[in-house]
Image 1 (cartoon, rainbow, N blue to C red):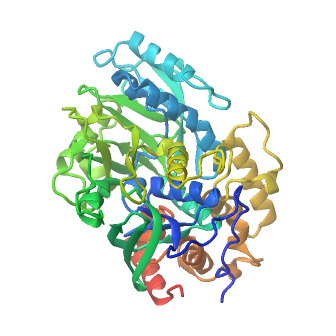
Image 2 (cartoon, rainbow, N blue to C red; image 1 turned 180 degrees about the vertical axis):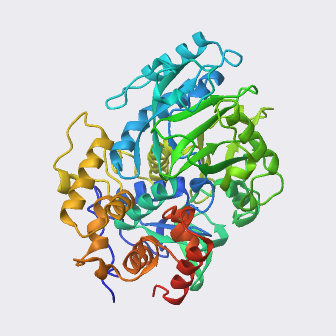
Image 3 (spheres, rainbow, N blue to C red; image 1 turned 90 degrees about the horizontal axis):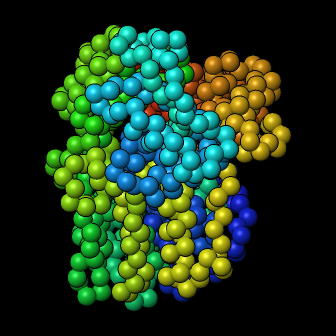
Length: 538
């Protein structure tokens, strides 16, 4: 056994785990390893429930790694009068930013004013509501700016003279899912990747599920099932879950909306992001990304076909995003500038809206107690995942006979894996900005490991937070990190990813656990994949 194969010790739960029940392997079986499934697994495990989660692919393989990577209230939702959703999301921003300052941080957004889209008075009202719908401790409010003198005006066309700036947050979405799953596992949950639920048979006393994974077929008995399959939530109920009497358990329809993004070489030097208004009333973000790049998105297009996993950007989307950004930047953007694209499918509740952009991003939790408990998660957005998980855990507990008073909520104020930096920088100071605390953490990492290259030290601090100590282990020099499989990626880190982060392939390591794939050549990416295949985790 190598130094990374020792399992993490479960954290102390507020409630002791349920005693084993006759003929059950777990209290709750969760289908889906995206942000909602992992969030629910974490919350339930922290309340002492016996939890198992299965994901048919890698963690965050689909929607949860294909977002615009923002922790935000959703400024544009105010136009659709989604005040409750915006307030809920705004309340969650700072809760999340404080929980994992290594993968989330505040970001200022610049909106150049284009009078042909929305009048200035409407924007001012919207930003006033955005500032005041929920309490802010660390995020500064909005204000008007003169783009002729502000740093953000430099790359813009001269016709944009005035604008507005406001605050939201940035998140590494795939690592957010990962850290949530790590915390769930540390609290006792069993997390199974590349494991498909092929059948879930319901009876009065519980569920019997068939799981197919790398180790073969497994039968699992659970007291309750949570359907958090995202774009596959409806098809799970129609084709996989079976009631005792054979009737369909699907009562809702999903509207699958594709959102696509472009990544191009860096378009500006400052650290602000842009939010651009389009003539069709949509908004487009241009966001600093991975130091050397700019992330641009997103689109809202009805998914064609019945396989959400096959969603890819269309040429028309590439042209659209380039055209909309080129309306604002002095230097035009063309499809030839694109270095990477990705597309995700948003599983939105079908509300018969003609405009995909107008479909609500709020979530609905649907309980079904006509037999063993079933909870289905419909919709949702990454910013509200913690609250969704808390509500879901309350509902599942109630269906299993123990309410919130007996198994209380606990995640508000709790850190995600690696997010507690106090051992490195001292206790959190109320009102301190998470990004400032992270910079102090980076300095502490460099002081403790002076032999680490500064760029590598920062990347590892970003990725692992306080878990960097587990990664570095007894290494005292770069030679102890093992051979460099690709620039800046050493064997010790890959073994850590395998043992602690469910990594099996190059795509897992380079596109979800990190975005190093953006910085590597095809040969370097192939070398990482080959190393993982030659050195499988046992």
